[in-house]
Length: 75
Length: 276
Image (tube, rainbow over all chains, first blue to last red):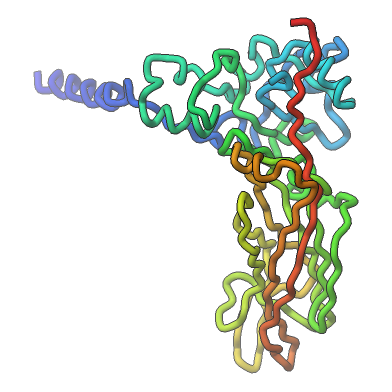
């Protein structure tokens, strides 16, 4: 019985922070988003402006690549 | 460069602006999502929590100073740059904290590997050092974050005091205040320890050539854009302060007035011409 109460209590404690977090908003911290230094970036296969398909491998230069994400070239 | 624009928009944009490097069309934002950099404030700003003060604060930071969220922004990333090696591992990354600000490519390269761009600069020589200083970019636009490099060569036998030295004037740059110019903390390279035996003193110094990097943000908010309108150049002023000693003599602290001029580029506001 005691053991059961113990487990329930533990379960309750584990759900508490989760419940408290619900509805609360995580502050945006752009430096923490996306692959960090030392991590591999995901591959991709996307059309370029000429209609050709580009992957991470195909844009690589001798020293690597620079991936610049912009909001839009349209507006 | 990767964006959620259609291939047609990117084709017109590259043609109209003479761009030859690959512009990738991530229509549907699948790659942007997979990279984990989707601008989630857009959803929030269009959703039930849009009046939440924390959401409103993030809207003005990451979407628009006007505080409104245009629905067409669904799917944009937080703008930023990854530099990866040939294995696809991130070696450095640059994300801005304010939506109107962007690091210039030359400014990023300067920060990453000190690569020199052919930008005209100033050379000054004193009895203690030689300094060659130049901006990372010959031309900047409102919202650009760029840098001023100071390549400093202590003269033979001289050392200059580095951060952490006490009792001496540490080398520093103080920039003249100017509207719409934000000065970021000066970046110092690693120094070396100088041991002065007669006093049994250990002090951090620079004795070999080194570079100080002063990052500058030319602000891009509407007021800044209005104030800069019609101007074709921008001049920044600053003072380099330092103290030099050799093995026998310590010289008085000295200062060198410096200035930098960059051309001002207007923002490209013309939309690519495509059938809409």
